Length: 247
Image 1 (cartoon, rainbow, N blue to C red):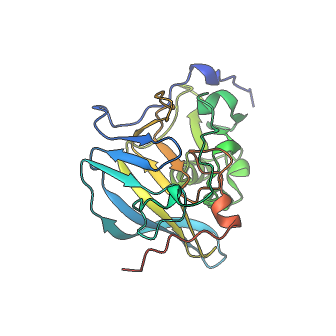
Image 2: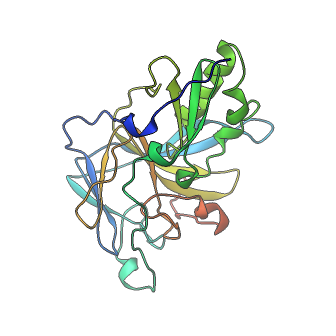
């Protein structure tokens, strides 16, 4: 099979929030300020009989107004909203993520009809990548089934770590998503996960600069990520629980 070369630096990652009315502002050593009233809903990771993540199940919805503060320190007693706990505890919420586009520093795995860009810095520990033979193997398999599995895994990746690229157009293969915010819950790991920010919602740093607009992003809400404001999966290691009562 002839290999193709994809210049990741020239591939743009766009979302669907064209007006820009919905965006998230990261406040300096404080909460996320969510603008524009996007739908906010719990998303529970569902697994098969082998424990592999396969889908999401929707849970509770949450009221939104024009500007709402969401907790990012992991200690609010009124999650997902901020209750001021970040100012009462010793916690460093300084941002450490770069503004480099995700694809610029991603590993590229060439497949038969599609290829896979993988940037581990944005892993939100959803574990959908383990489905089938594992996404890194599925993308190399011949046939439509393997291609569909690869694309489905990437669509479920909460933080957008995995991006499928067409070998023909060199562009991302993705669905158009309406803007939404999901509160990830992980029953298998018995913990709460990040804010799944989908549909091209802009995230503005406390510095005033904006991070790359992506279809899927996951923002840390446990306060312990080493790639703030983005999730790096630490919530599972520290057994973060948001304390939201079941519906």
